[in-house]
Length: 112
Image: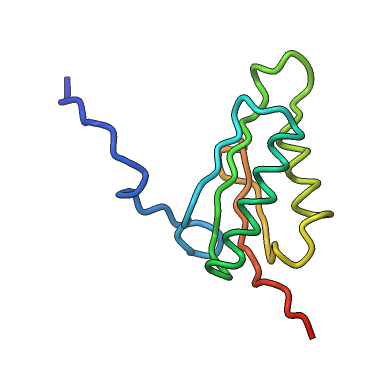
């Protein structure tokens, strides 16, 4: 049997996604209700769109396998990202594991 390797912290892992860009930050929504999750997603996306336009973020919702009913967070977050985020989300794809989204944020709105 091989030697057991210690877990590698996320910061030291290079994860390339969404057109080869490295994920800059993650938000894990496990255990939250939809309303709470959407509030956190909104703040997370807004903060990063101001801090670093074009950054790629991972939003982890989980697949909903342990939910009492149908999965809720995955679809609720998808709807917010597509409908309510305005120009703060430039692009999005489903995460390879299926339990979340990869999002490229846009820049802050210019007020003229």
